[in-house]
Length: 212
Image 1 (cartoon, rainbow, N blue to C red):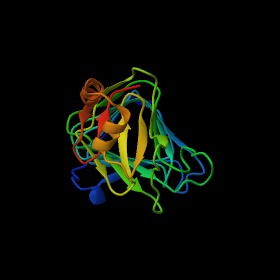
Image 2 (tube, rainbow, N blue to C red):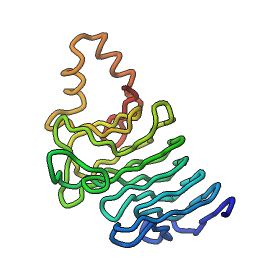
Image 3 (cartoon, helix red, strand yellow):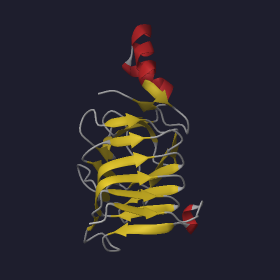
């Protein structure tokens, strides 16, 4: 199998970007790409399936798992400056949510590196949203295998939420704001200060925390 695949078109807009699509168009059959390293600039990785080795999403690249929604699995994933991870949240179909059915999920079996100036975009699918207190594992990785944080988390209408970088979970706040969340879970000033110290980013309106 190839040691290094490079996709490097000149697109700077999502609509103009070349697409690497895993699997078939309706998500019923997963696809796979086997290489030691795959680097993408000006392109989109979408669909359902697995990419082995290290995948580098460089500038003007987009990760959009599934066929609305779906699961994409990587061995190692590097999100660089101007790379965007797009995650869709669908309406909850049953008592519990299922990855690839009710929400997009990015699975990383090795290391996930989130670089400066990268972006996470949260998108509703069929008017889906995250309910108050609901925990959705939009990223899945082993403990301690994630590094960095998104420069911006853009919420396009999935409801008030926070993102736990340490676990990859999106957590619904309902009608509460991030400030009200801090006040409700941390009763004393020192507890509130500790929680604020865990907050590594709030650009885009979604607070990012490193915590258990």
